[in-house]
Structure formats: C-alpha cells, structure tokens
Length: 580
Ligand SMILES: Nc1nc2c(ncn2[C@@H]2O[C@H](COP(=O)(O)OP(=O)(O)OP(=O)(O)O)[C@@H](O)[C@H]2O)c(=O)[nH]1
Image 1 (cartoon, rainbow, N blue to C red):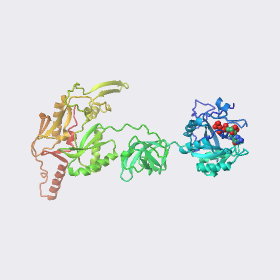
Image 2: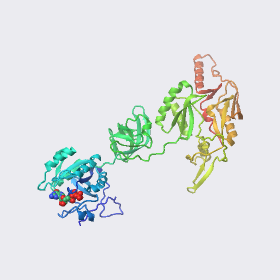
Image 3: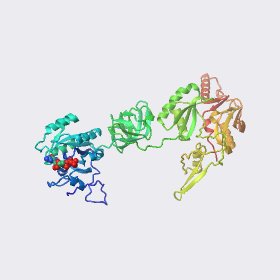
Image 4: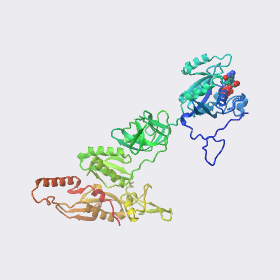
C-alpha cells in the first residue's frame, strides 16, 4: 500500500520548527484552485487522481501507483472509491506556483451525498466521461450537481487508448446534453498519462481562484443629500467593488455599489474594499433605515448568513417636541426627518397635545443625547422647538395598591478593582438618574467617578403626577411623574427654578406645583416692565426701531402659557436639580 503524502497547513512558529510543516499562510489566494473530480463509476477518476499526484510530485512516479487516494481497505478490495479524499498539489505554471486542492469523490450513486458535500468546497469540477461508454446516469447527475452549484465544469474524455474509444461521439453527446462546446473537452488517457498535463493547465486557467464570499458589518450610517446613504462597514470576508450587486440581510433588498473607499477621515474612494478593511460604501440606498446598524451586506450571487449584529439602540428618555407655532410644523417635520436620518438611534412617533397641538414624541439614549439633538435642530436646521419634560417609560397598574416600599437606590454589589478604584452596582429608578445624576456624581467626585447604566426592567413604585402652574394655568410640558415621598421637595425646587428662568413681566406671576387640585409649593414672580427704550435718550428713531425689533424677536423665542411668556430653555432648566 503506497503512502499518501500529508501536508499540514499549520502556521510555523519559532518554537515549532517541524520539518513536515509547510507554511502556506502567505500563499496568495489568487493562486489557489479547489476542484473535484466527478464521474460515473469506473470512468477513471481515481486513476486520473494518481496521475495528477505523480505529475505534481505529491507521490513518486513508480509506475505502480494505483488509486492512491482510495485508502480504505474496502476501497482497495473492491477497486471503488467510497470516501471522498483530498490532496493538495503544487503545480508550476507560467513561472508561478499554484496550489491545487483536489478532492476525489466516489462515483457510485450510493455515495452521491459525498459528491455534493465535496462540491460545496470547490469552485470547479473535472467531469470524467469514459471514451467508450459515453455519458451515463451518474455523469448526468454529477453534471447537474456541479451546474446548480455554479461551478466551472471541465469535461475530460478518458480512456482514449482503448481500442473502441470514440471520443468524437462522446464530445457531441456532451455538447448536446450539457451544452458545452466540444472544443472545451480534453481527451486523455489517465492510465497512460496522455494529455494529463492539459488537465492541470485547464484547472489553473478555467477554474476561478478561491474567493471568500464578501460579507461586511454595517456599524454606522449617515445621509448625504446628494449621494444618499453612506454606510460605514467593516469587511469581514471577501471583497467588494463598484458595480457589484449587494444585498442587505435585514431587508433583503438588492443594491448596486456606486462607490467604496476608506475614511482618512474624509472619504477616499478606492477600487475595492478587502477583508479586514474598514471603510464606506455607497449603494443607492435612499434612507438610513436601509443600512441599519448591525446589518450584514453580502454579494447577491454569494449569500451568507447574517452576522450577529448589534443590539438595537434602545431609547431610555422620552420627550415631546412641538413647534413654537403650529405654522412651523411642516418645516420642523422635515428638519426632524433629516436629522434622524443622520442619527438613527432617535425614535420618532407622531403625537399631539391639547395645549401644544401637533408634534412628536421622541426617544433618546439619554439626556445629553436629547440636548445634542435639540441643539443640532436649532443650529443645523434653524428650527425652534418646545421640548417637554423628559420622561421615562412607565407601566401603570390602575386602581391597584402599590405594595413595594420606596426603594430609590438599592446597592447590588461592590467590587474593588484595585486599591484605588471600586465598582458599585446599584438598582435605580431611571427617572432618578436621567436628568442630572451624572453631573452631580462628577462634581462630588471631582471628576473621578464614571457612570454607566443599563435597563433592569420595570418595577412597581408609588408614583404620582405633579403639575406646574403659571397663574393657575397648567404647563403641560412640565408635568412630571414623581415619587410620592419626594413630591414636596421636587415641587418646591421646580417652582424655584421656574421662577429663576422666567423674566419678570408686567404683572405678577404665581408659580405653583400641584398634585391634582392640591397646591404643594408656590413662588411669586414680581411684576416689572422692561423698558427697552430706556437706554435711548436722544431721538435716534432707527436705533429705537432696532431695539423694539430685538425685543419682538426675543418674544418669539418665548412660549406663551396663559398670559405668561416662558423662555424655551426654562423647560429644560427646571428639570436640572441643583442638589448639594
Ligand atoms: N484503458 C484504460 N483504462 C483506464 C483508464 N483510466 C482508468 N482505467 C481503468 O478503469 C478502471 C476504473 O478506474 P478507476 O480510476 O478506479 O475509476 P473510478 O472512476 O475512480 O471508479 P470509482 O472510484 O469506483 O468511482 C480501472 O480498472 C482503471 O485501470 C484509461 O485511461 N485507460
């Protein structure tokens, strides 16, 4: 029994100077071919494999090699192949070395599952047909397996040395049944080695190099007014280039790639993006939701399983957003739409309120996120909005006792990371931490403490609704849900801050906090008339007009509640607790 040469593909390390180990880690993928030999039983697959092994130096030319890849005793006894075998061959062609991975397969119908498994590892097949017997049942079955797997098929007519061989007849059969031109057939004698070199050449020339299928993870996306969605991707396999048809695993929509490139940090278009690279891709996606963060992109013709992706962004703070005036609704809508295209983590739902009219309910990742969004709306889209008090999602159980004791912050564990740092885990009600907990923590710890949070689910709590009133008129934006035990202190603090945020007006303003009809806190803003013209002694009418205009513009930035003008930033200032 002749020995089968084994080549291992382990990476060589300095401590592992194993003589038998060949380092193929640097072998260029463009010079690797994976192929199968398929045929009807006894048409000569294993004999051809013997010749290929000999000619590439994998086994010595002894003239005695017979079905070397048939290693099982049963295979040797019966002269048939049962188990698919693999051999890696090195072949010099055109001055370059190629790595040809040959997978021998059984021809008998009973073992056809071995054939389909082998085919999935290949880009091409040698389809062997006996020059005497011509196309047989398993020839047809194997052809279709290879054809459906979109493999390159090289027809090889074997046993041309036989007396009654009729390769021309077989060629026309192949042309007729498989629609493969007869010029593509290679006539050989595996037994004698005739033309076997041509088979090796055809493997290099006609079978495509191994390309891992392209797959990329979308980790960010933004919207460009002229070019549509620009998705930032990490290429985890294969390659992608302009003109490729790609599919997004999430929506299963197909796109043609218009541009790929690197971010340096500006976009730098490149010919291709390869596995391991991080860059951008533009593929005619019209909306950011088409390039969802965590989505997988792959080539239309090489589908892959979707990557695990990211957890979808989960909004934690919700606030209402309304135009200052209902006439500004359409403009604000388009501003919000465009901004959310750039920030897909913002959740948007249409909403309306009796006092404020049509608007939206927006979900943010935290308070800072909400403030940044707001600021961007104003700075980038010149939009002027009223933001209602941020709230967190509650689940209310109506008319049932709430039984659980007041637990505002419950320590869960404490771990000393080293002698200077400690990590503490607490369970907090979300509304206790979203507004200013982080700021307070930073100032108390002189900036050393850091803070992160994740949702721990809903818990029952004793909560009540608290309203703020201006001259008896409820300010809907400032209605909050508070813990019953903290209602009085919160109400008092909010009244004080609201008082500080509202400029004195021509009449006295009562600022009150109330639970239902019961007022729990009160502040008073004294009447005052701001004479903007006071500075203008002398008769410069244009200067007077300018100042009056400025005052009118200032008023525009106010929201009128009842007869009281409230500056926009009052709504957020009121929520910032200034605890000591
Ligand atoms: N005359 C002649 N005989 C050949 C040639 N190639 C193979 N044979 C013979 O055909 C028979 C079958 O060859 P194998 O190589 O075992 O055929 P196979 O396709 O591998 O068969 P299975 O493994 O059973 O599917 C053997 O007796 C070979 O010697 C050839 O080119 N000329």
